[in-house]
Image (cartoon, rainbow, N blue to C red):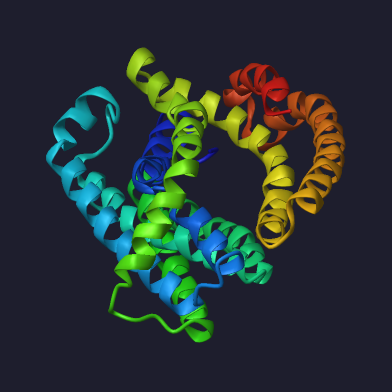
Length: 306
């Protein structure tokens, strides 16, 4: 943020978030269906993982191609002032993002949470080192920052594919009957996923579209990113809880859900209070006074996160 400044930091946010935001429109609940079919229905991990990868590559590539033909509209309406050369590598990440998301569902079903922890920590470390190199050492600016982030996404997707393949060998053949069942079950959670996308992801593109200033996106995005740290708590508990609920009887599942929700709400509330106190002091300290306007969005978003 300090090296890019508000303008380019806003463009960076829009470009980096774009593959994740767009991929939500074609997820179709495959990740949730993977957990359900492996835990409840006893489906083979290899068959579920193979279906998931095949679907991710097919749908992700199709979506990337469609968006490429609409790139002029994106550049005029949403990605205003973004270098056109960065659109192609950004859209090419959509299949990788989908593969990563689906394979995390396989790991979740097997309760292999090491993969989840590595997926949370390693990209941030790589990004920190990469940004130091491209921004501070080589001064490549926005282009270097976006390409570095793209390389990290590709690397983590390939790493996760190898990790899953060791435990559940991936096959070229698609189990069509299983895939139909996965899509049927996943469609139920897809509505919720899509609603979440419209609520939690599309906001930054609305700001870009309506205000037309990348700096405004940067201020809002920093507020969102800080508040999103709180959501790691319910995300973590939900990740651990879901595969266990899928394998539990209904009454036991309800009791476990209530107990975990109480603890999650308490911890999230503590975090919200702490961030409300520390945020107005920390933002100028970490980002510099150019980003003081990120404080107000953060404070407004805190109750919503809770």
